[in-house]
Length: 242
Image (cartoon, rainbow, N blue to C red):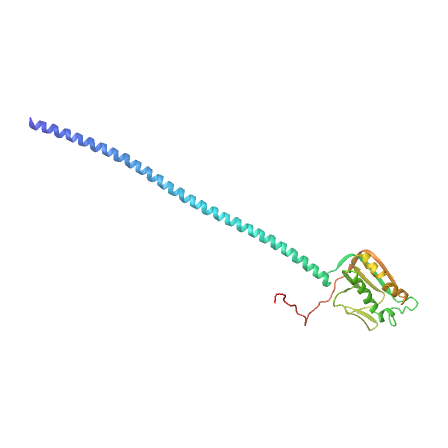
């Protein structure tokens, strides 16, 4: 009897132990599932954080590229502006130096020897022997604001020489003969008035020397370019900063 009761007690104890183990297993299983979900969430959060960092880095890089592109565009615009101004300055100084053919309003003055003593444009030409009269006309035109002058289609510049030799007048080392045609670009009214003033140089040439002088205003006067090159052997520019 005692043996039977011991077996029953042992069976009940085994049943309780099995139930307990089963319940713990289920609890552990449930806890394991919760642990795995939490780990996945942490992994996703870590990936999201990395993506945000990468996005921030790409955004910063894009900003830098856009800034650099803008700088390139501004630099190109500035370079274009500088080049354009340099070209304008170059053209301006080429005109001043006489290395550009120009046109504009102005006057044309033609000077020739007297009719009664016309030598046939050779020996005994009064205007050739007295070529300083031409220089006087040029000085008057310069004083009246002429922007460009030519004599018989030879551009007058700061290095132009005018003198008589071998039955001709050399202008820029080119032999010329009368009639002498002096063209000037500038304010036509001012240039005309400077030469035609009372007791002025035109009246002197006509009344004193009996020269044939014709002067007229024109809307379009073409002045050719200076065809020689100027080489400076002794003159050197001075650095203003030194």
